[in-house]
Amino acid sequence: MLSRRSVLASALTVAAVPRAKGWAASRMVSTQDLALIDLLTWGATPSALDEFLTLGRDQWLRWQLAPSPQQRLPFNVQQQIDALPVSHHTALELGQAFEAQGRAANKIADPDARIDAKKQYQKAMAEMARQASSAFILRALYSPDQLRERMTWFWFNHFNVYQAKGIVRVLVGDYEENAIRQHAMGHFRDLLMATLRHPAMLRFLDNADNKAGHINENYAREIMELHTMGVSSGYTQQDVEQLARILTGAGIDFRPTDPKVKPEWQPLVVREGAFLFNPARHDFSDKVFLGHTIKGSGFSEIEQAVDILCAHPATARHIAHRLALYFVADEPSGALVARMAKRFTESNGHIPSVLDEMIRSPEFTASLGTRFKDPVRYVYSAVRSAFEGRLIVNPAPIQGWLNRLSEGLYNRLTPDGYPLDSTAWSSSGQMMARFDIAHQIGSGAPKLFSRPDEVTVGEITVPQLQQGPYFEAWRTTLSRQTRTALEKATSPQEWNTLFLSSPEFMS
Image 1: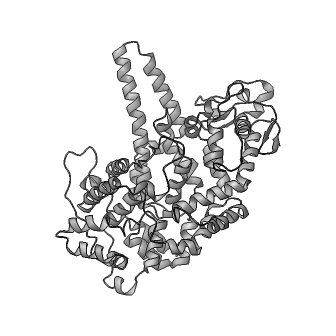
Image 2: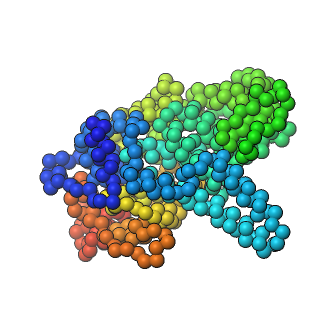
Image 3: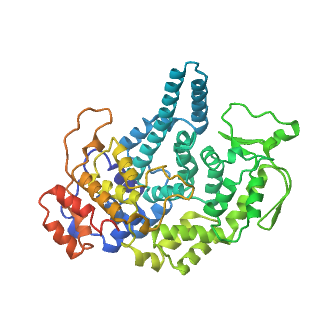
């Protein structure tokens, strides 16, 4: 079974994926299964349908919920990601390099030269974020572990950081890969701790400035309000203050050596990459947090607080509700959320177990085909549908489309992340923009297949979405109005545009 899955994954290369003529008649997914595949991936494709039919529903779900480390991106996609310099440097290395560049620019005596050097510094930081977004898009489009990629986006949005704040744009790629993706299908506690120890989060929510005698409550408040328990869950302002004191000393240090501290504090220094817990900046007084007494001891206070938060019933409910909101409905049933929260608690926050509870629920099954696509899901699914079997070499237009639809990667200014409810993305302006993007994709989107430094655009290949078993799987989902509109299309480009902007494709 593994070798078959590997073969299917490797089919996403420059060469088109061939299909047997009898596939549509003899091997057709049901409408419900099509909706399931489309929801748990970044969009149903011919190879995704083939993989589902080959593995069977239960095995396919097991593969997605417990992705094998042996699964890899297609070779030519991995080559593109490996060609991005941001892929080869840790957050510590990037932070050291860019802090040095910033200091050097500030030391230039000539005013004009200093201004130019600062512009180059800003441009170089923006390039790091651009490369990170390119890698994210390529993984979303081509990874065989599609549910992991869906969850990577979900958790990044949940633990949101904004790229334009300070040096965050330099760190965002490492944050996404090592704090989020690595733990996206693991245990929630590990995920929370990974984000807490990452310099992108510590800078974005100002905990790098939080020290004894100069308390900054920003991060403590958002951990409780957004990341764990949720608003109106019973914590008080005193709990926020106590958590902020617990978090003092957790910060960033790009220097190659440990800080100089008192000899008795040296064993309490905790360092991992760019993360530094500096006991000289920590408030060692005892705290009372959510009714629990935490003795002043250093970094272990943070671990105790995280344990308390992850075990709190409000956290289980909040995470369960967010997942159900993302996958099931704008107003998920209380019964579903309660069962998911119970599974969260019983499994010690094991994310795949909570997802499994949701996927096997009658509420989830009843909702299939009804969840309106947010911009990221819409764009990715349209691109995957139109261009499977072709290698995208320039993801920049995709990022541009997401920016136009107000859901650009790393561009959410506030820590709450982008809205998960469909009403946020269904305005008339959104629909007009989607129609235009559908037209660009349906007409071949040649810039996706031309490198940014190429002067001329290569030959345009128009997708043939109306041909083959892929559309046959979709056909039964279409309303009479949509089928009538498609029948009146006068060209493949127009047909593609109408299909990709249809209500059925957007759900």
